Amino acid sequence: MGAGAVGKSLIGRLAARGIALGPVSAVSYRVASRIANGLNGGTAVREASELSAAAVVLFHAQPEQMPATVELLAEAKISWPGRTLLFCDCEVTPAMIHQFRQEGASVAVAREFGLSGRVLLEGSGRGLLQAHRVAKEAQLKAVEILPGASERFDAAVTLSTCGITPLIDKATALLRSAGVRELDAPRLAAALIAQTADAYAHSGKQSWGWYARVPEVPRILAEADAARADAPEMPEMFPFLLLFGLELFDKHPELAIALRRRMAAPAPSGK
Image (cartoon, rainbow, N blue to C red; front, top):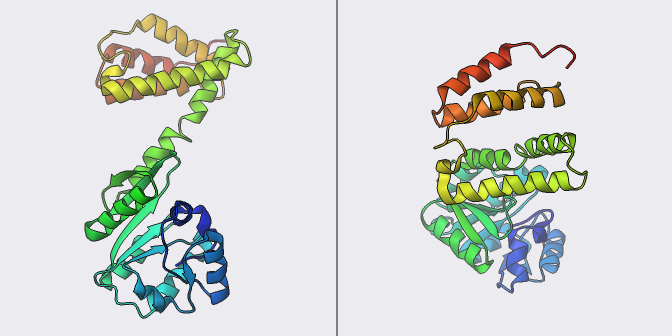
């Protein structure tokens, strides 16, 4: 069941790998034919009810097309008990999932999340097992989460992507201000971030530079002053981030106290 750019979704990836698709339904037969032709797989049908020939119904639609396409599928004469509905790369709401579960469908969600070669799976029971099978057929590594936990997962993705890019940019600016060449600064900042992430993947929180080593408070305060001078529009950024780590790992209270005092102090004259 599809609307919009179905070929760019997980369904398109399956078709590209030669996985056999069954009936293809859409808002009209013309649209269904266009989707089937774009996928180079499946057979367009005139009624969504004809999807009852499939044990697993794959669904994709763009956000603006979701309500109408979901309603079309819900109104189809499909006996859902024993059948799986897999939402692929679309923004499905809990209400939509509940609607089909109430009809007896085993519902799961499969979507890419920006990491090449991996797909997020959310669901339970038979639907989740079918989602794992689809991921395997698409040659994607599955990352399974608990039902209803997609917002937490997405928050982690946001922190790891959009949340960290501004920090890399600020680190790059400090490197340039320190005299590192224009082209080398972003590469050096990115390399440091990558090294830190790799160390965390191997050792967890013990990879934190101050987990077992006591930081030099005067040196860190001097760094905080330098960061403040270089980014006066964000004077508390550097100490705030360090405090987050100190409090998260419950380490070095003397440095935490010194940083809070430095945050409360006015910027040096002329800075």
